[in-house]
Length: 335
Ligand code: UT7
Image 1 (cartoon, rainbow, N blue to C red):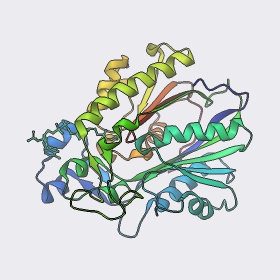
Image 2: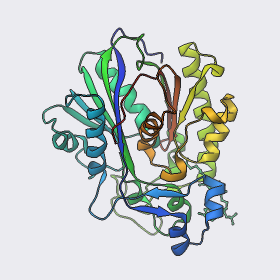
Image 3: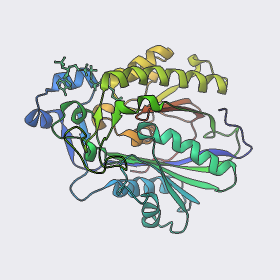
Image 4: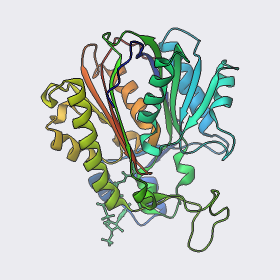
């Protein structure tokens, strides 16, 4: 869809938070049949963060959300949208608790579930709330305690996933101003739902069985291929709808799933390595938190600067994917 509304959703603040506990490749070597060389060469990851016992998704979301509001220089929002695939409980949604703890009791608050594509789906949701006049300002948070889904004995998923949260504030504004979301592209393919799934614990199978784990199962190779194909296609569509030749992209901000996936995507789009945002080495794959974490880090370091043409894309379980474009605004990063 090309996103056309006189009331655009304009990025006006951002923030992020990582839990202090870390898991290095050396830590994984101590408990699993794996090694630093394999993990670095096959994924680009050296370190991930992990929630400590008793800490959960809402705790990460509150920290990131407060920083985003501070960055936006306002403690107000009319809606809190939480993109997560690790809600604190299966029911109810985690967003209302986050909204109350952030000091926004009474506002609209709900979760968006699209695994690693959750933040891009959340952008579209926030844009819709603003376009329809339901909200003037939306706090969109991507937060994951994804390591709680990972089987500690599974060397493949344990090497990839980490925890964290990132958040943005979007306000109603002019479609032509910096920070306005320009194009939003979303897609899904339920035919691939088995490729990344937590088989037990949901409504279909409440209890784990010998064949149905309560942990994440992933067919990495197939996911890899789909990820490159669908993110490439979504990026082409979003850039075309925006009227930007791919050679005009200043910053490609792709979901951090695997450095090899991001490189294959950048190569397919012809975006040079220096224009590809990356932080996977020290945070791993944080699912729906990955893009806002990366945006905040790039903004703080000066890699993202006012006026740059930014192309965002994500892919994950579902299968679900998406892409978005915007011209980067001037934003304050909050430590
Ligand atoms: O965020 C969206 C959701 N997830 C993704 O996007 C993940 C996408 N997929 C990937 O990132 C990659 O497929 C993986 C990193 C998961 C795996 O890399 P790969 O190059 O596709 O490896 P593979 O699955 O083809 O496995 C190659 C070998 C296997 O051993 P054999 O069967 O050849 O003996 C694996 O058992 O590597 C083995 N292996 C490992 N070895 C050491 C898998 N994980 C590890 C490990 N350490 N951690």
